[in-house]
Length: 345
Ligand code: DCP
Ligand code: MG
Ligand code: MN
Image (cartoon, rainbow, N blue to C red; front, side, top):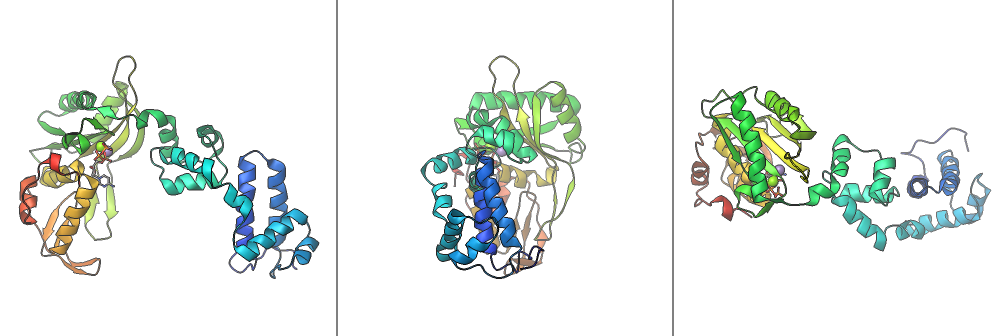
């Protein structure tokens, strides 16, 4: 065998290497450095090996591969998996995956990845894992974000934003959407939609508003913060987003950190944005699907009619229609109006 590593695409032992690497990561992250080191040695040997190592005897002759590792490699080759590794992904790990999956911004796939890497506690994640900014924030407020927000606290949060926004720009239309508008007794976060009926006064509001709310220590951490014009979406319609997703805390003793989402839209988009931001997510999905089936296109920005699709692609954008109210959108879709409290699915 040559001394140079063999390309991972062509390496005949890649499947084995991948499994051993998973195991090495597990050991390393659970502070079993010596075992991790043993696996790493075998991995680098296999990386330089340009023919499949098949038998136990063959494997034993490779530098860095002892009897127990050779047995495990044979097991991987014969069964495609490794009992030792599977053991790490049972009982206790399911609970850990549940725990990790609850962190804001990390789903089941991310949770599983962390478990596979050997992390078992929130502290492991804090101290050892490589986290994105949003994961750092999600972890920081992990337990607080799990607490639902009582309706009256959501309206207090809305009031703080309203007061700041109105002091910057009079006459704004400010509505709290999401589960709050659907009438829920408690909410996961506070979803605030802002626009202005004059069609222009919503512009250049997001940055000053966020600045003001940070200066008063109401906003305490950022998640998503953009007033950029996004790239064109797959369907070809432009998507401008003026939105702030972050963390807020009301003044006073014993207040929890809460998730807050603020979206600012031009008045022409108001009804579509209101419909979208009120949800629920499932309701939105079925509304969009209904639009698709009737040669329309519905998004959080707009409604088009006379849309021509080829498969999933829109080949003709049809015509943008005016949607002054939520009711008007229902009418285009030939649906009886449903009040927010009846939009859970
Ligand atoms: N929304 C959506 N698709 C997404 C995320 C959100 O259509 N992937 C829409 C529908 C949601 C609304 O935005 O109702 C607000 O999003 P939230 O995540 O805040 O959801 P809810 O307010 O409905 O529930 P919660 O009480 O958990 O915040
Ligand atoms: Mg919400
Ligand atoms: Mn939200």
